[in-house]
Length: 80
Image (tube, rainbow, N blue to C red; front, side, top):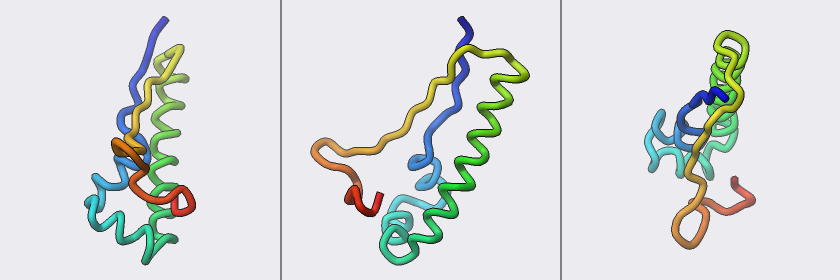
């Protein structure tokens, strides 16, 4: 079995791209910008996954993201 790693997930890539404080502000002030950013990150990650499957022939893809804090999500489920 051959495994590939597609790196960090949507949320981590989003806050690494614009900064965590800015991303949290955008969740409330500019939700369309967060959606657009998330969609673009998803497109890139999907493309990478397809290349791993088609070009390398992997059997599974490892994926990680950090969607929560110790006792709650970083934003409300409605905003998420």
